Length: 253
Length: 370
Image (cartoon, rainbow over the protein chains, first blue to last red):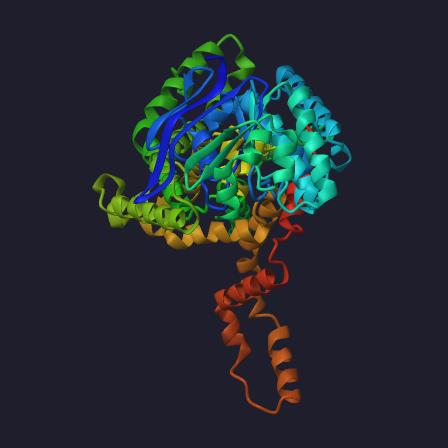
């Protein structure tokens, strides 16, 4: 029972459509888990359910034993789950640095009144945030873009900036929604190294939704396979690769 | 930052001197310019505060005149019914301040000198707070809506306020309400404008304040980054409403007469135009637009009666051999020209007076809080 995230028999229905049914999932501390499935299998719905965008119709979700049902997305992020998005959702009118800085809001000790009085404590905290944000950007080699509007970054850098922004909320569990989408094989290789590096460096758990089998099979220790909202297989990559149900879901009869 | 502070200091000192010596002029031509200046100050307060809601936070509100009305009527009735007793208590001949200052003969004239200012400040804070309360009451239920829907709800709210005032006999209903104490002066108008600018810029230029911008850019992503978007929207709405209320109070104590019609939908649109023309999310641009759009109709007033217009018409008819209707008459309806200029400005600078939106925001972003 030392699972970090526990999804217990969760079902989501949208009207008559059951998007996810009876999902059981657990992610341990410092574990790198994959979630795969054909188009429309409900992977992103699972993400939205864990992060509070959708509420499960049935079932319970908990993080380190704390129930997450009914919490708002920002509350869930505050408890330690951060995410990226399938289609990049950066704050387009802000600079690279400000995108990261905005995510530090969560652990901010000062409020609107301190922002107005600008006392020494406020200045000290702003300086600390600046330093921490720059450190994060440096790790990902984005520090030279700090004053660039984020919409002007190359595609791959935007993807990485989204990950940096998520890490700035100091999560215990990072959810990555198709980070390899639209990348070429070289970039995908670099991404795999990057994800493993993040997992070790920040000492966190990662749940990865991905279409690209090479990426998922290459780095995940354990994989869940969804099809039409039902978990059809679960296990280490080698086992998943040979699972007849998975082959059937992907390739047909 | 220190240079900005020095400039602000000099500015405030200048205003203070203005307050002491800049009595409301009585001669007609001076009074006219004084009138324009006060209106500029009031419009700056309105535009800068609406910019926090519409520009920085991206919530399209069309109800600013409604909040201004709340502030104007609240402050006006405070001055009419409650303030005299209070000011007398503080600064009257047997008042608290007079008593405290008794040992200092050279300071005894002070309370009397500043009694009007005191009355204005207290009434203005009262008006602002009631408007902020109205902002809270409207904001909490309606800020779940976005874009056009929010615009319609705030528009409806503004009209409700106006209609309610129209039916309250205590506030003069359709007859209007007079405010006897015409205390508004240059110092407090521009002083409060400076406070509004400082508060909006101070809020936005901080890690806390980046939250307002994230709400505008992408609410879903903002929530996923742990930002309580509802809280930010409500704060923007309440602060915006507060300053709309103070502007209302200054207006009430300047004109000395309020009618519900003065706070109709078109008043809201005027402020929205200033924000859009100035460039959503650029405080400097919005201030400039507020000044420009206050002066412009006044400048156009004189244009029709210059020698230039008939000469221009003669020259034009020399080139095109048709008889035009007298331009002079057309220009006398200055609002046609005003609207035309607005259209031209929007066509040539759709991104606002001060460069593109991103640029103006970058200026805000890249001014580090040292």
